Image (cartoon, rainbow, N blue to C red; front, side):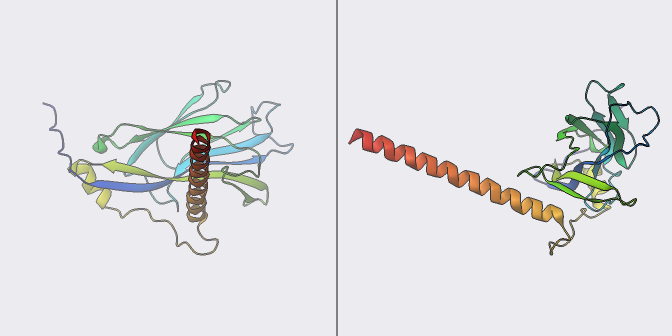
Length: 212
């Protein structure tokens, strides 16, 4: 006999923040075993909470689909940390599919991330650089997002409530790169919107002048 379907809670939404992206650094003469000769970088792609909090209570599995040139290019990670480390020489789009815990009874969520290996300094890339624990130069391309569960079922809601929302650190000075990132994204959106309005006004003025 099939288990009864859990009742969903109407008009309720619960969100959980995540960070996804990749880190990368150049490889020296010492390369990992079986790394192709033409590969120049070591990279790691990941999905995690903003401060590495536990996400396993609602994320069951993460599937990373790499470029078709990689052997067995669909990689499945069944336990945290939800990350994958590989070598390569080029940048490409990675499909990230997040499968939720069985109790959630939610459809998988698909994200896309452009794997970054180089510290391009252009707007919108959200790339930072620094050093790792070995002192090697490393770049990080990461994005903040929120997973929103609309009208979760009662059982899953109870699971979510066992842990408070994974919160971002305080938005003070340089402590929270994601708060700065979100602020800049909002500024960029407003700037684009204002430019669009200016174009429409100019177009209307031209049409009025033509009619005169």
